[in-house]
Length: 348
Image 1 (cartoon, rainbow, N blue to C red):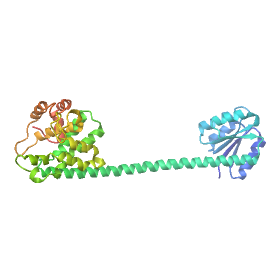
Image 2: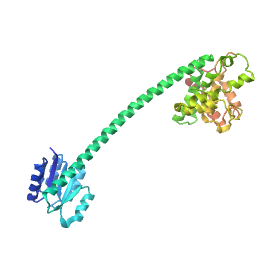
Image 3: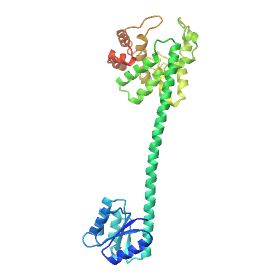
């Protein structure tokens, strides 16, 4: 079956002629002598096309056109009009008709117009179906990509944690210093109003802050005594080394910035570039505070962990020198219990 077509015209002879012509070509035709009858057919039959006489008794073909476009907007409509009523026919196109046929008409011309319009309708529908299928495939592929990227990111995270734990163990850190400062950094960043994406980047940088120490020999890194000038110069290179390791990997682009700047000081006395104030990335300014928190509240070979109150005193004392004063205020506003939850351990 090529399609269902409504023929609505108050002249029976015209309906019959169109009906015979289209039926021979395989179309299924439904006849209506008025707009009211046409509307009944519309409500009971799924139509592909409607041929509507503009001038019918009672409601006009224009009224029926509006009904069709309201109830079955996908139905293609051709208007049938007299030669002296062209303005009305053009108005019908404005209301959604595809084209018009003028009376008196040639049946071959009617058939050709119907075929052309139905072919156009078929192509449009195929394109819509293609687009719908394409959109569904895109959604499915996007979901697959999201899943794969999530798995890749998770693999990254697991690999990083394993690497950083190994580095922490190399320096004989108690527990995992890098994981604790990452948790502390996320807490302080959230309190400071850093958006989620920024917190995620900061967390990676905090976790990886000392990755550059992979290039420092054990003789220097694990030396129990004070480093001499040459050894200290080597040690001071680890932020730059870490930056070089990470900066070529797009996944770590933002994190590399923190790694490079995590030993800068607010007063400009830090390294490797002697940055000061807000020229230091905020991620590094946040890190400076939480690194001090973890360093002071963790056991060291040369001393036991200090109490949390000692940390607060040190942070206040170094505000404006080592630390950003605005971030110091945020830091001091976070309760001890919140830091403990972040670290997963009690502070003295």
